[in-house]
Length: 506
Ligand SMILES: Cc1cc2nc3c(=O)[nH]c(=O)nc-3n(C[C@H](O)[C@H](O)[C@H](O)COP(=O)(O)OP(=O)(O)OC[C@H]3O[C@@H](n4cnc5c(N)ncnc54)[C@H](O)[C@@H]3O)c2cc1C
Image 1 (cartoon, protein in one colour):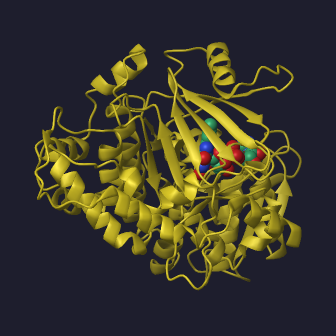
Image 2: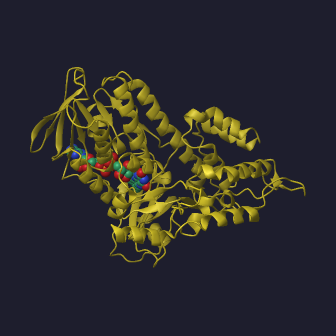
């Protein structure tokens, strides 16, 4: 690595999927102009994965940080708003057959406290309404197909994310990155050459010969050409906790003028199906475990689930490498995106990790004066992000109460539970100080205490046969909460109208 330069030197990003172009944009913004020279090389023979239509609120920060307004990128990517995720059929418990994981807003403060109070009573075996759906404005926005963009008069800001077409977002970012000075090369890497110290020296390509650089970013997807194949960085599989390793995807048309503003993630027999509303179609897919069902069976089950009997619509079948590399930053090479790891897409976290990885890298690399001084700390942090998201995703499976297939029983009975999760479950089940426990574990948890409360309460993890509440039990009245939420959502516009207006103006 050229440490003498007043910058990171020449950077070669290998891979032009969403991860590659997001990385290019973030690096170009952080280190504009010379002597930094950012080049992105992608193969025309090897396609991008082309799925990944959901996001987390961090995606807002990505576009805001680049000063790209929604009115520019959303129409170009057939994007819609996402208020949260609904999870039907994960639990069979009466009253808990579906729940909604909202994106929270600081304005939910009062209802969050009401929720925590009701949950505390219900955990103490008192029969009060404690299903999270009643407590959050976001749930009402999603149910009413509203856009999370209130009229400016209202002092309530709703947190939100987006849905978008995977191929289009890469293309949009590509245009922007090239316009901001990133060099774009098309060729296939056939070999990678290393220096004596193990650092990467150059890549050999099919048509252009050698391309050397000071620093390399591996965005080659599941192939992980630089990190796994060249540097031999060990891959730590999550298979013992996350069984799903395949997916099948199928588009369907929208239902007339209806345009939902939520992702729906429905548990099926051997995994779960996503339904993601884009401005021009639904994206659907079934994420499943190949140890339990084969590809044909999964496609049949998905078609049945979405009511698609039209064989002319062809399905895409995908394999997933679920887990993470032992370290994302190795010598003069940073792995970003699927090349560094992947957690199945239940909470749509992959692009959030891309952003976290690149932003943390920029900070640590700059602080270390463009050396690898803080590499070890960086790797610990990124690994923690991966492992803590994995824990939260696994919780969905651990809490399921389905008995229709071995898949669900095996998931529930899975004993590969991390110490962190075991502690959370113990404290919850024993009626202990849950908030205290979550705060104690705070730095190593990817999700907020409210998200943990939502999943545990939403799946109905409560003592059976609760006692009737006494008349003086102090919990919020569900009708009052509903009225409060309804009063607020009146200030939000329809999702379909908002998206149509944005597209018409673009
Ligand atoms: C079923 C499924 C659902 C998903 N859902 C979501 C979701 O809802 N939300 C979310 O955030 N993420 C989701 N993801 C993850 C998301 O798709 C990826 O994180 C994202 O698309 C980034 O992929 P990538 O750029 O790392 O890899 P890819 O898109 O695979 O790109 C790899 C790039 O590397 C290049 N390349 C490979 N080998 C070579 C070579 N030898 N020489 C030159 N170039 C090479 C290819 O040409 C390509 O440009 C999902 C993934 C799957 C599998």
